[in-house]
Length: 88
Image 1 (tube, rainbow, N blue to C red):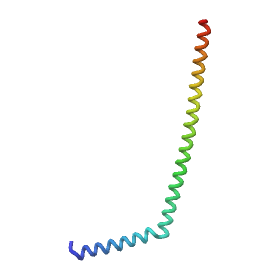
Image 2 (tube, one colour):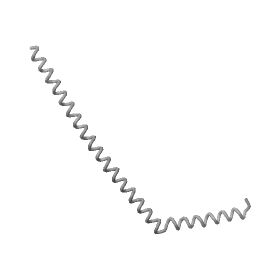
Image 3 (cartoon, helix red, strand yellow):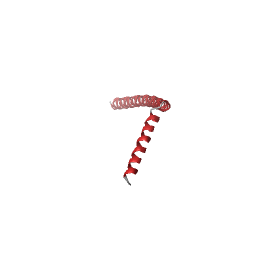
Image 4 (spheres, rainbow, N blue to C red):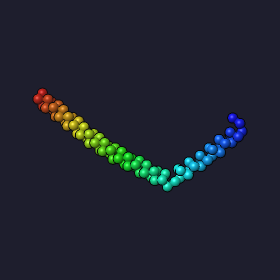
């Protein structure tokens, strides 16, 4: 590629880049950025609400499981006491 071709490519790239910056900085582009950011925030809020629901359900499950284990342990202890009383 000769020197004139390189210079032409450089100037073309500079003009294209300048036009790109103007397009990216325009009011229409800003509206798109705002709408995209608002949608991302809505998605984040929905994901956090879903995560909170899952966390609450997990806490409920854990508490119920602990209760079941306590009831089983109490029943087993009562059975051991009954067996000891029957032997005596």
